[in-house]
Amino acid sequence: MRERYPANVLGYLRAGIYLRDLGAYAEADALFERGFSNCVDARPLRIHHAWSAFYRMDWDLALQRWQALAHDMPMDPMGHGGVALSLLRMGKFKAARDTIAMLPSVLTDDIDLSIVMAQVASAQQDWTVALALWSALKARVPEHEKVVRGYGNALQQVSLMMLDESQGVGSERPPERQSIVAVDNPIARDLMMRFESFGDNCEFGLVQRHFGAEPIGLLRWTDVPAEQLARMLESRFVGLGEVDCSQIMLVGWGEYFIMDQAFGLGIHTWVNEHEGDAADIFARQTRRIRRLRDELLELLEEGGQIVVYRPRRRLDEMLRQRIFKALRAIGCNTLLLVEAEDGTNPPGTLRELAPGLVVGYISHLSPVPINGRQVWDIPFDLWLEICRVALVYHDKQSAVATFGPVVGGHERSMEAEDIPES
Image 1 (cartoon, rainbow, N blue to C red):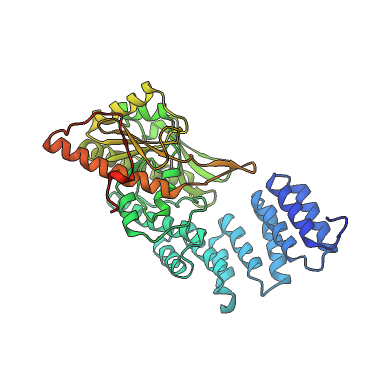
Image 2: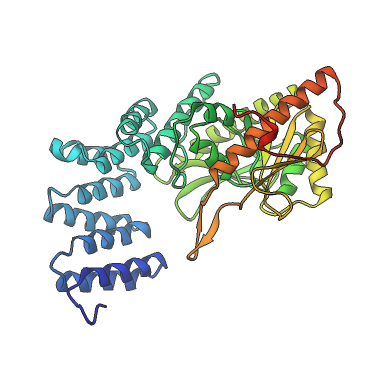
């Protein structure tokens, strides 16, 4: 296309984005730059040329490219937003905020620039201001995925601040989640708040976010392999969050992680490089993990919890029983395992394996590989259905524990017809 139509911007743009997404940044840059001189409207090429530097985390180069775009196109919000984002990643929060604040109102009302301003407040850990900014954006564009993510993160962070204040612990930066659109469904939100996520990845945490639920869960945003989960439950989480069993490290994409050595977990801090002192982050985060660990253990000991575990591979009988027996040894809780349909059990149904142990089936697990990438293609409606069925099952089991058993065997399937709509 570029050879036949050398002035057509789409040929350069599509090929350059493809190369950039493959990680071939030098080749992508060269292609974008060739298009600068050949195309009349080089704006989209210059924008993605700047993103190319940004995505490889070359903040100085990204800043230069965004500044050049902002200089040449002063009334285009993209350049100014890119400048602010680059400064934000460099830890220059005041400069990032001032970049937007000094613009004329006709630009600052732009949705993307408003989002950047809210992101700056979040990076500064000014959660009162951040929540107000995200709330205003939520009223304007309630389905914008960045707004859903930012609002959910800020709301969760305010809750964590309230948790921390009882022990004088400082707050951390919330997660940058995948592209999730929230729905306004108070019944579904309340339903999702009844469940405790144990992993093994972030899928159920994202399901909760989709339905507007933001519980503060110890393992909600942590990869938890089944063997490690069994050991954690069997030991009652002994060692998790302890200073002598933890290390802090900076991972490849620039976020600090707490590396747990007791069970081999990598735990998000939600703090990027330049956004905090590593020693302070380590002290605050490990203290927070211990607090959430102790509160979770107390809840499990009281019983009546519904624990969701979505293993990446179907568990063998021995490991499944280890997890269930260890959970039940702590307290009388329900374990909901979530698996992809197997041809016998259709999506949206539950199968009881033993009292308090059920398997829920959805169409597929996420993320899934699409065009060489891992994509969060989550079947939200099926998750909602199995959670609805599981809650009714759990409540019936609680009644059985109180008033005595009903006649019936195990290993039975439950479908939507078994329960009321709400």
